[in-house]
Image (cartoon, rainbow, N blue to C red; front, side):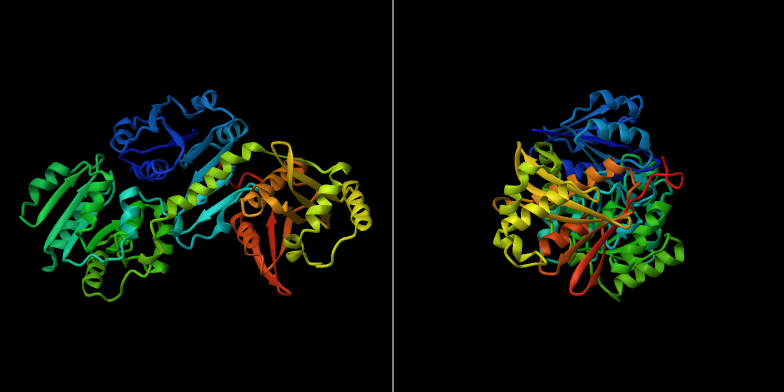
Length: 483
């Protein structure tokens, strides 16, 4: 079974959202053993939603993780403060690095960046040439009960409201929201949910005594989902719980109260995910609640969460584990025959710019010229020593033009992603940004699979003469980025 190492953090100051979304992901992945590591004691939180393939160990400092990493592990990081020096060391030991990140405020040494924020600008990220991006609400990190809620088509229809500001709520917005809700003679029931880090539970539950007000503490995912399904209205911050509420198809008042929520807030606002309370000031909160109960608009983003996000993410994590079986090397003369057979396959010719059949003498001369040219990097992808594809970079005027293909018998297996990733890794490690500044791929508009692959690798896209031209720049980690 594959092993996933999770580095994360959570406490009453920063909240527990990182832990919740990590657990939401790893607890639903198939064929994975996951161990959480943190410098804080997360044992009670991890055990609250534990399963047999998930455990926790505490570290004195994050550097202590290095001796525990093997070359077959993948490391999942959901922590803004882990240094790039440590991440570089982890990357040299592990099979892959995955980041969960929604602020893009560092240089990323990552194989995969996961960000479920709708409309997030992928070009805010700076990182390695071969990094892939899973961006958007279709990758929502929902716990299993909320995945099931998302699959339901029925809209909640009652006059109950749910208030929740996460596990800690350091600004005590829970109480502020409750007071504001009570000013409206509209709701039948008010359900207030607080986490283990909330400091005012006893005082609040004693101060607000009413048959219509109910207080809850430390609900698990199933209990939260059941409660959401009986509350048509809600007040949440722009954090993970907002996605859960959207999955439950609630009408939601939301806003931000810390800086790293602001960009997420702006993107959800543009999508129409919530009724806007801005930063939860009294007048803004009152106005948002009034808008919500008078049905001035509805949540247009509800239908975008379909409950299939974990399955989408699983495919890409599986590919990272599978990459250990592949090797990339320089093409040699002995490869001329197999590349000739690949090039003349009808499916290959279909997506080539020249449709004519290739003659042997022409191919042989062309191939020998390419493998001996200083202006060409020609690579062969192997699986278990068997050639299964090729990728070529033709160098000119500071640009590396990509051409790649997969052997006909291996089409439809996702090997194109592995080939492009291995190729980009190779040239980045080979020349250290000195020979060229950009990498370019030209794709016919009918070649949907290649278009999606280039998009996932963060290439910029323009359309020229009926084809898509994809370009990506080499970027170095420098003093402008955290390290």
